[in-house]
Image (cartoon, rainbow, N blue to C red; front, side):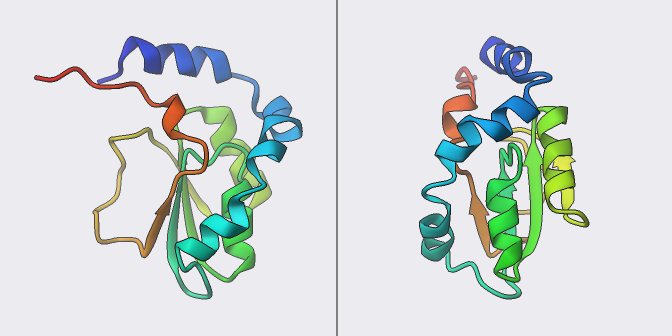
Length: 123
């Protein structure tokens, strides 16, 4: 179930992965190393990069020897991460519904993503 906000986010970012990678992704890259340090990401860590965008966190985690998985709600962003980190599993998914069990990862990272997630209405 998506919200109108989620639908608007998909429209806004659709087809903009390359532009994002050259612009805003560079700004969002600054805290990545500190984020990985705080999460204890190192060799063999199982890491999920939620809202992977163009793959900045995935690339950095992979460079540290982590087993990286990635998810994004926008197809172009998911494809950009696939190109940036060949061989990493990238799925189409959005918060809060993710196609993984809660015990599958050592760290789940979301770098500048929560502002792109709509709020669910209470039942």
